[in-house]
Amino acid sequence: MRLTFHGGAKSVTGANYLVESGQANILVDCGLIQGGYYCDKRNFEPFPYEPDKISAAFITHAHIDHTGRLPKLIKDGFKGTVYSTPPTREFAGLLLADSESILNKEAQRENHAPLYGIDDVQKLMTQWQGVSYRKPIEEKGFKITLYDAGHILGSSVVVVESEGKKIAFSGDLGNSPSPIIMPTESLEELDIDYCVIESTYGDRFHEDVDKRKGILENIIEATVKTGGVLMIPAFAMERTQQLLFELNELVENGRIPRVPIFIDSPLAIKLTAVYREYRSYFNPEVRDLIKSGDDIFNFRGLKMTLATEESKAINEVPSPKIIIAGSGMSQGGRILHHERRYLSDPKNTILFVGYQAKNSLGRKILEGAKIVKIFGEEVPVNCRVEAIGGYSAHADQAQLLNWLKPARKTLKKVFVVQGEEEASAALLRKIHDELAIEAVAPNVGDVIEI
Image (cartoon, rainbow, N blue to C red; front, side, top):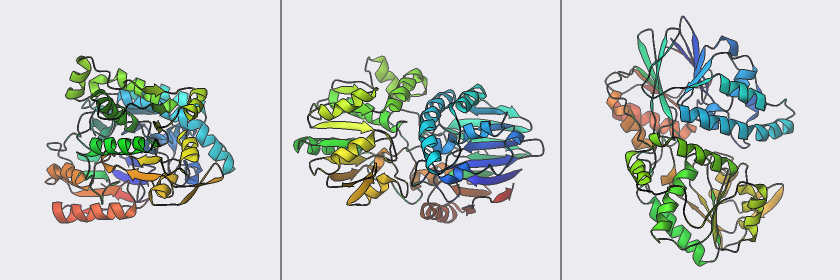
C-alpha cells in the first residue's frame, strides 16, 4: 500500500488522505482548508490526483474540514461511492448546502469560479451510502471498517485493511465522556500496524471538563447580574447540542436565572432535528432520560430563531439575554451581527466554547484584540472575554495517548496530523517517549510506502 498526505499535514484543517493498492485507490476524508477566511484559496487548486481514478471515499465525520471538498471532487469527475455512518451522511448534506453560498462569495472575492454548486451537493448525496459501525465494507482489495470516534454524533475511526496490513485513521477523536454520545472505541484487539492520528489538542489538557457546567453557570449568573448579553459563538454541530443539553439541566433545576435564551442559527436548528432522529447513537444515560419524558433539547425560555426577521427581533428583547449563534470561530453567520452590536459594552460577555483557528476572528478576540473589524467596521472589544476548554469535542493530549496505548504492541509507526505544528510536535514527542512508538509529522505531499 501507499499512503499520501494531501491535506491535514501540519495543519488543523483540510484532511485528505489517499491510499493506493495494486487494485484500487481510495480516499479518507476530503476536507476544506480553512484559515483567516472560511475557505483558503488553496481549495480552488486542482486535486493532486485524478478524481475519476478514485474508487471510493470514506468519511470520518461531517465537519466541513473533513467533507468540504467532496462536491468539488464530484464536479471534477469522481464517480465512486462515498461511505460514512448514516448520521454523518445526513449532517454533511445540510452542512455542505449551507456552505455553498459562503464559498461562492469568497470565490467572487478571490476572482475564482465557484468551488461547487448546489447541484454538485445533490449529486454527491446520490453517491453517498450510510453504513453501520463494525460492518466491513469490501472495495476492490480493500476492507474498511468504521468504529465510533466519540467526537460528534456518527463520527468514525476508519480502519483500512489491504495487502495484509491495517491503517487506522482517527479522524477527530472525542473528548470522552461526552454528555450525549457514546465514548471513543478502543483500538485494543484490532492489531493496527499504522495509525494516522489527529493532534488538535496535542499539546493541551482539558482541565475543566468536570467543571464546565459550573463554569457556564457562573458566567451566566455574572452576566445576568450586570444586565448584559452573553454571546456564545458555537459550532452548529455538536457544540450547540451539548450546550442545549446542559442549559436544559441548569434551567430545569433552577440553577440559573430565568432569561431569554436564543439559538440563532438556522443550521443548528436543522441539525438538532437530525439529532432527534438518531437517538440510538446517544449514550445509555441520555436514552434513559428521554424515555423518562425529558425533552433534552427544549426548555422554558428557549427560542429558536429560524427566520431572518426572528433573528433581527432579538435586538428588541431587553437584556439580560443569552445568544448562541454560528459560526464557532466567528468567521461568518449570525454571530457577527451580535458581536458588532454587543462587543463594545463592558456589561456584556463573549464566551468561546470551541477551538479557535489561527487568524480567525474568534482567535483574535480570545487573544486580547482591543479592536476587531466586522463587516468593514472597526468594533472595540470592551466586553468580558471568557473561554471554557472543557466543551471541546476533541480529545486532549492525555486522551490521545490513552487511545493509542492499547495498540502499542502492534503499531509500527504513527503519523501525527490535523494540528498546528506546535501541537503535532508535542504529541509526537509524547508518543515516542512514553509509548516507544516511532512517530512522524508528515508534510503535505509526503508519500509513505506501507
